[in-house]
Length: 244
Image (cartoon, rainbow, N blue to C red; front, top):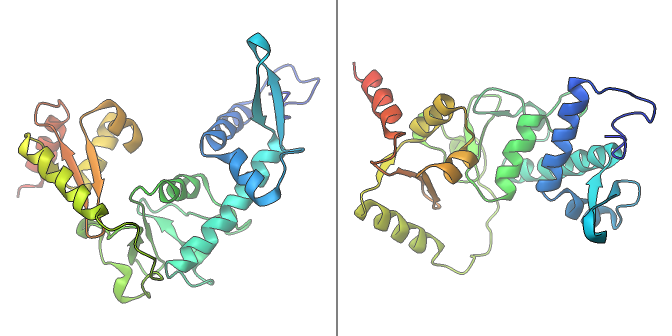
């Protein structure tokens, strides 16, 4: 923590807030923080420190200043992105995730932690959805019906993009069909959210640790689960509770 300049040189202990800051820095590093700083600033000077490792190797760590600069640059990118998706400048700081939490801090204009996580999904081309002040929902793919009214009628569509080697959807749909033929069953976005709530795992963790498959096409996001997966019991309970 001292190398990262989270702790003062004479500090003898750290606070929970400082430890949380360390975790945020590690998360930023995993999100490509060094690349973003290099791309935007052309240097890491003052923003990273080297840490000696065994066998003469060294690893880079973000400093506190580097993390703050990373969040600033990421927030600028996110602002431009959400505006390109139809968010008017006067409303962009009022955007919320579908969980109701703000994506931007209204005072600083920087991404909140929820905003960082959502925009990271956007950058990784994973399905991500957000809500406008009037309640309309938008996303980087078509929002599921259970999230409510789509923003398509209230906001202009995203700028047209050049096709990316056509056939992406075709391959994705072939994978959906293949999984279903092997026995996988489709679950809804709400049921996938219920799995996260019950297991206390993130979507990324579930994709790594369970049979859950997420396949996104331009028209729809598919969530598929193996019937032999213990998680199907949670889905079954959720469906049973929904029956009047």
